Image (cartoon, rainbow, N blue to C red; front, side):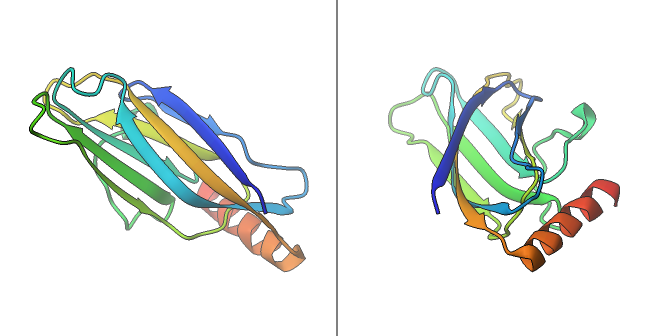
Length: 148
């Protein structure tokens, strides 16, 4: 099935919504790529954490803490760069191989000391056609995450 791409620039402490829900939930999605880069790479020392959730986050919960015990967390990218040319940027990415059929939420937190730089993200999602049973399971998982 086709790949859908999304990209954006999120300020530190910000959140983007990727609208994926449909009326019948027959299309699911799986993360195939997640990348991040500072808005001004090389201009300042920078460390950013981009996280993808299955549920919307409150402003107070958007942080740089990565906790894989959180069942609503399905992807993380950590971007780090220094101002000197001898220090290359690093990026660590971990994504869940889970299929979902509802909206997802992307957060950003600059974790540099005093950091306030925004961060860009690039996301690729593979579309997956769901049969009735898969649709029901994905939808029930998403409902449990919203109400649980």
